[in-house]
Length: 638
Image (cartoon, rainbow, N blue to C red; front, top):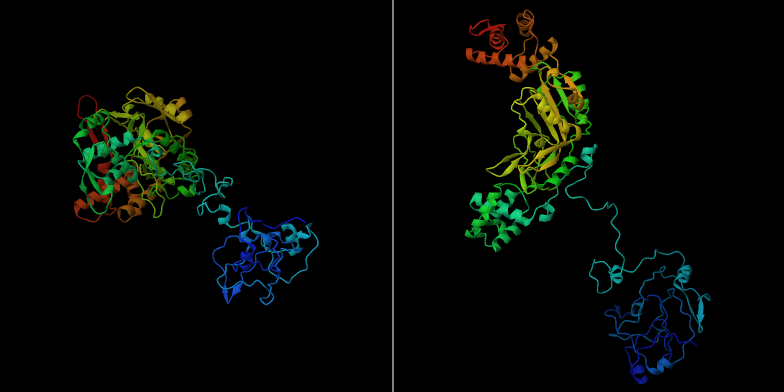
């Protein structure tokens, strides 16, 4: 017969007499009362803890009991151990009742069992089955066979987390022996820094650019030496500064600025003058320069005197311009209806500017002066929804280029609860840049100032992701042909070529909705090559009599003057029809302003009075005639 009992480790053990008199000997509930028989240590079910005197016998697991040699040599009884639960043996029938204070009975945890098996709840006892592998008169049922006998039961679960990790693994830590954990559900890979994807209905909001707050200088795209120079220049121009004020000037996180300041302190370039304000920490300390930094600071100021927010790398700005493009919008007529304020816009104008704005390409306005070409362009930029981010400054080949212009970019306030972003960027509306007769070719390139040794971005670069209006086209100091040649490449390839003062040329994105407006004859200004690149052309015509009345009514309401249609009819009959004077959209506003000025001068309330209208016409409509010879120029009201 094969001995399947668990043998103790080799070594001297207690005598058989000691084993018989040992009261702490562990006895399983399934053992026979015979003291000489040794229990067969098969895989029993997890027994319930016996209760002695109403108190559970639990606590620390005792060491494995050691049997005597006599007990080891006892023959094994031929008993079938079924892993199914059995009813408890009454205490009266059990010969091995543990006395008070004895260790708990033998349990499954004392065996080298690595997995936990759960079966059905205890039920009535079942007769032992003959199926199974019989070795030496004992039948050993496999776990699969035990589950089959037990019938459908609760779902089998793996071992607890603590048992899977083992005693040496920290709580919640990964199991080094297991394979790498699978990514969480819904994970789409690492998100690119500076890009925040939000829900939206159009393409511009789906891949919306949102600059992430940098946690290191490497994420900010700057090196420690450049940031140290910015800190030294900020303290130099201010005299002394607190740490938090330096971080606000540089628009960088306080943690990054504190590390740079601490490095400058170790180099003896700055020192602490004292604490300023409430709070503790380096951010509240007041710093000033030391005498050791004099030579270093002179070299820094010789390179550039830029003192402002930390610049953004050029590549990051170029990627942001692509994500915030002004092209590919879906602007509808309904969306444009209320974006032009008090302007009276005809249907043909909506039908002309709508497709042009969706394309984001150039448009050419022409027509007689004073009919709202400039006002239409100023209202077109309001049709673009959403905000963009504009950097304070750019870093191009170690040269700083100032980008943000408070006169052009309209900053917007953050909504409550909005996520944080890199404060080197300014959240603002899409810009509208208007240039007129003062435009020159030099203004369309990077403007380098030798005194401060940094650049100012040109107009078209500041208008990125917005609109650029070249008003009064043909009246610039430069000839129209040279100006058009400057715009041919950007309009064709969406790339502009700029030149540094060192002679190096760089490519910058040209993502601008360009509009050209002129009141001159287009045939004298443009050629076929330019017209081919400007796909949309729109003539802004003069208003008719009905529209003239509508404009007068709107302006009277805006100026607070009672509208009188009969007075407007008198103006048309007396001063327009007899002289064949054409209407212009700006005339109701200008005439009404003069009526208000004259009424205030006469001390009477402003109103559309025929006498006031006659006086306004005589002052407003003046024709200068140049007589023959050398006689002085005479003026006549017509």
